[in-house]
Each structure stands twice: as C-alpha cells, then as structure tokens.
Length: 99
Image (cartoon, rainbow, N blue to C red; front, side, top):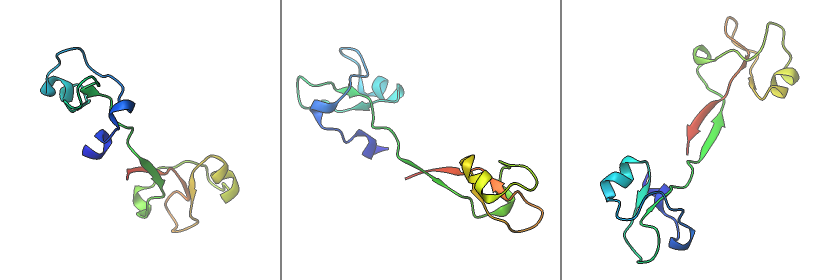
C-alpha cells in the first residue's frame, strides 16, 4: 500500500543494492523513491497496521475452546466468547483485519 511507503528519508532502511531499478525494488516488496539524493531509494515499507476483531458470522467461527469453557477461560486464551447461538463454537479465534 502506498501509505506504507510514506517514510521520512532519514528514517528509510535500505532494501536494495546500488543501482537497483524501481521494478526490481517493488518486485522485492520494497518502496522506491529516487529523491532526495544521498538517501536510500529502495527502502523497507512500514509494517501493515492490523487489528483483531471477533467475527460476526457465527458460522465462520474457528473453535478456540472446548465444550463448557467459561468466558474467563476463553478470554485467558486470547479468544472471543459469545454464548450464542447454539450449534457453533462459543469460544473462537479473532480475525486479523488490515486497517
């Protein structure tokens, strides 16, 4: 994403080799910006921002517990807990979403 490449030139971490082309740089998963001179042109992007969410669709839940698990035990495992509806996991894993 373009916003991952908005890095102050002095904070750029080199990601290529001298003379690397923009295409080669991008193919390596890096950012390319040929200005200003004297700074890395091919540089590592900022890490993606992600957040954990509890999926709303009960049928997409991936089980994280066991029958009879309490909300406290489930949350201690770092998972979501919703004691409804019947027939689906009540203790289930988060989904990771990009911001």
